[in-house]
Image (tube, one colour):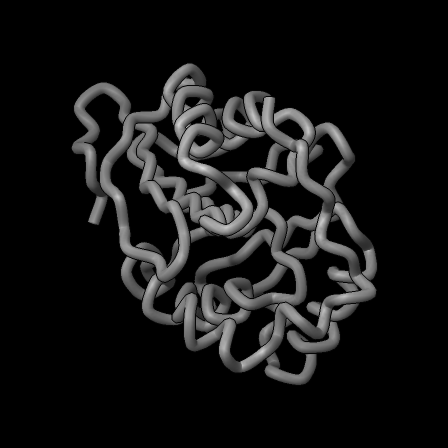
Length: 195
């Protein structure tokens, strides 16, 4: 279990949209590297849409992003942004439950993103199991956690939970001031990297 951190509050949502945060995390670069047009992508802990909006642009008209957050207020902010950007048709907003993503039969999911969120989840082992079950064989899960909040031993625990759920470590992408890992769900005859 992780989840010993507080959930980032809606009252501070404007922090998530700061220009320097976009510059630091470079969401467009990461999205372009791991998401293909037509993909269905799960954005866990989407907040106000730092990754959701670039994902929605990248998946195109034939793709979809499922933006999941625990807080209705975050989803409302994201909805307004999506309307403004003309991306609502590509984004499905979903409110998670405190102990579960609560996604039933979402269809195929090719890629999952978990940025600055796993440490806030009360039961990270359950999260790993849920994401693993939702991904298609060959699907990938990119996790990045802030170094200033998540020490190396806690991140190692997260990786161990992911491996226990069935994931295999496929790489360690560079994300500024973050501990990051690319996980894959291999299947029979499925190469470790679908790209």
